[in-house]
Image (cartoon, protein in one colour):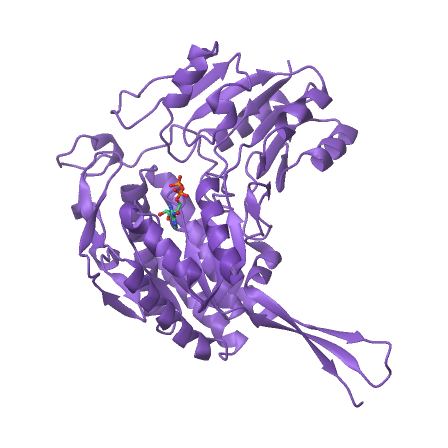
Length: 484
Ligand code: ADP
């Protein structure tokens, strides 16, 4: 049977982990951490007591991080909760436009010296930051699990993946080359220099609170830029913990700044960051709707932008596919991370879809959802149109390759696409014709620091990771060298 699984959890994209030598690829439900010997809380299964006591105090920062200092916000604090239990994890500085502008000023001041730091020195500072992430990986993973709600094993995987971006960009920092061009004039040469764009405003989502930051910040710092990070309101602790480690690594004050804020303040902080004349670059991961708002800001002051927006990843299984491989790939890529699904399931069922398995809240508690498979899905259903964050796989049947491609390419987004086939000619055709930025052929996990991550259509602009990711933070300058 041929089938097309519409896998919409694209911003919750597949991480290429664990690294070699680590445990095999986790499936959902994941192996859970051992139960604590004692301890209250509604979800003992998670090995988590439902409060900040479980969290590593040394890395649990609650102030903003600006110019190398921990600063409170004038408006006070906002609460951050554990999404699994609802327990309050802490209160964090609720920054506004004034604090955002202060952070931009600090970043700009730091840029004036950071851009002159040798590539080798920038490289070694990023490497120290990476080493500290690895040293503190278990504590960092606990922070992610607490603030984001994903299983601890997923969080541990994210921390490694996240740290690998710092490692990768510490290496790439030394490989920013220019060009020499022979012009028609004998007495002239064209030189192309690569220079950092300046201060980058970085706005990140909740689903990969650490990896989204290092993927952007690693490239920015390697290029010689400085950054102001506005983390998602639900997950500020990862960004702040990275600030603590940046300090310990000796990253100069003002090079990495973090301005956390509540959902209520997100708009004013976003606007302050993205309209400030001292900011030269906006890098955003989040919803397409927010991305469009930020693009308007960028247009007004002609800033460089990178946008990683929503996706709707098709997962196509052709007749010739190795079905066991396809099932393993679908499980590995689909039923992971975390999310809040239910409305789409109800909508699909009301329009004729059949629940093959799952479909309701899990007995673990009201904030958990069962892994769910829907059949008889049509393109009219919300789950075929909206991005899904959660363990939901709707299945659409198709008859021909053209039909499968038509379904997949009908989306106005195009981040990743996956297909399973053993037919070499079909593999070539479909890989070329899928309208996405990343294609998995007989593989459900494709993200790795060495390869370019990004989408086409309304899934975004630019690429992250890989040797290309650093270009997003560099300007080309042509120097015409005459009089030879
Ligand atoms: P998600 O669905 O992942 O929460 P959002 O686009 O709403 O996607 O959020 C991603 C990031 O964008 C978060 O850090 C959020 O605070 C920020 N954000 C949301 N709305 C705005 C806005 N109007 N201006 C700037 N940032 C925003």
